[in-house]
Length: 346
Image 1 (tube, rainbow, N blue to C red):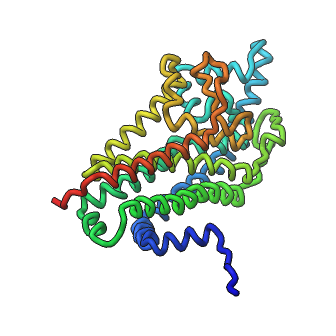
Image 2: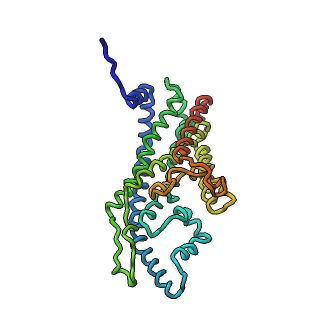
Image 3: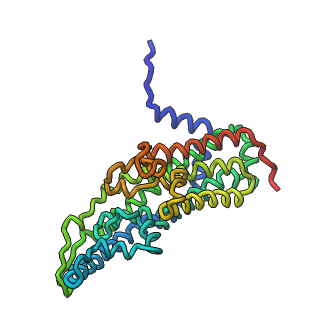
């Protein structure tokens, strides 16, 4: 009497990937991405490590001195407050800098608020998008442009396996990129923290609440889901463009244009009321790791208030939207790639 051996779904999936030839493609793509992946991870982690030092400078020296000067000025100018000065500083062109840093709810005198800027910094978002567009645009259109796709499809390999292989690569590389951010923050805090204010360095009384200097590196971990979802979303719609394209540079240019327009619409929509209704149509509207790090209310959802006169319309999960965009992009890439002709190399 034979006994059935139970296998886990993960083992079944790995056997399917290996036997279908997808594993060979994954290893090939990972070898090609080896050096660029390491470089990007070092840049992301290094920036976060450096930002820990920048935050120390701000919360232990600049903001305490600024706060003390404000308190001294209140003796001569009744009614003067730090919030009033902040409003004046962030008017006009300064409003854009405040928006890029996280908006009006950000408190620069608090360590966690300052550190969270590193996860929404324009440089970080640029690197995320460059990686996603560069990798996905070369996945299919790049191979066609080089003439290697025809050789690949000459093998007994179904086209859906090509798309599945690149999806598998994303599932490997995106968590590595996200973890490099967190590792940079943790390493910086291990090297530099904890933050301390030394009153003897100032020629005026300084009073900084101890809780403002507290940092919890574990709070940055959940935000990695939102970061990974953004990268996956950009990869998804770029993969669709790649599956329909012929030339690598055209696909990359188109994906850069689409992504840049979304970024500008989301940014300008926060500065110009007439464009605000367009923000939910961009993937960057659902990118809010800062709220997740600071554990603000409704951090994991977007309420679409811009479509309802400033009042909450619906609580939409941000991860569902971003991962949904990525999945739809890959599904359309599969559908397009299955039905198109692969031209011979020029």
